[in-house]
Amino acid sequence: MAYLRIEYFSSALRRQTSFEMYLPNDPRPEADQSRLNQPMKTLFLLHGYTGKAGNWVPEWVAEKYNLAIVMPSAENSFYLDGLSTGHAYQTMVGVELVDYVRRTFHLAMKPEDTFICGLSMGGFGALHTGLAYPETFGKIGALSSAFIVHEIATMQPGGGNAVANYDYYRECFGDPATVLERDVNPEVLMLRLQAEGKALPAICMCCGTEDFLLQNNRDMDKFMTEHHIPHTYWEGPGTHDMAFWSENVVKVLDWMMN
Image (cartoon, rainbow, N blue to C red; front, side, top):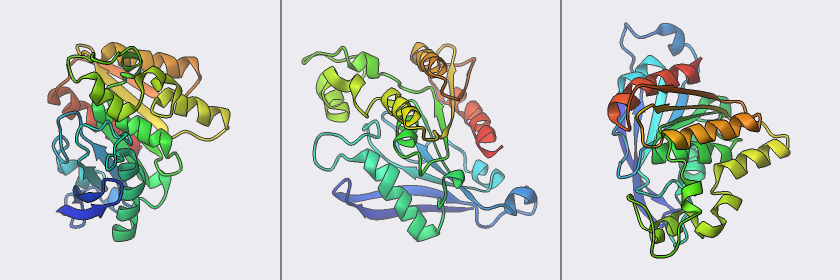
């Protein structure tokens, strides 16, 4: 198992940045040989709010699934192209990083070999990025996702919520008054792809039954069901913590690989 930390200059961020990577290029004899004989898939793995690269999926899953795992650090950006210069995190992950991995490792060349997954803020980022670039990502996994655009739409200057203030959300999402109508809203992207007759990536979502974001995830499941958008969704015991994510990310990966 190779563990890599790679620094490169990001045009999207206007600075040096880095990402981490697991590359299962030296499998042990007991590894699943059936997977080793198949082309290596690539997973772009997104952290949550206050998180960083490489902090929530154990490395053994890379070998189990013959899966290269690419882990960017995107600060508290919601993986969106923010208003200010050097905050183009959507472009960094969905375009620039994918292109770097393709050129450097010859991986993630086709959507059927390229997945994206995240938790909390990263769950939002995985769904949004996957929908923004459906020609790149074939499957999306979203755990305990921060689907909060409807809450953001009600925010006023000087306000905010327990996580961050109005100015932070405006930097990430743009004007809250119009957030529901623009591409920062995954619902807008889904309906547009559907109206244009384009294929959406396969989508898998889950959330803990004691998670403070449970209703947000139920609302997204309901929206997708009402608009006939194919997806898989489940709930299970757990809150917004590593115990739930560690158990359920393996289930998401099973879904992705099968």
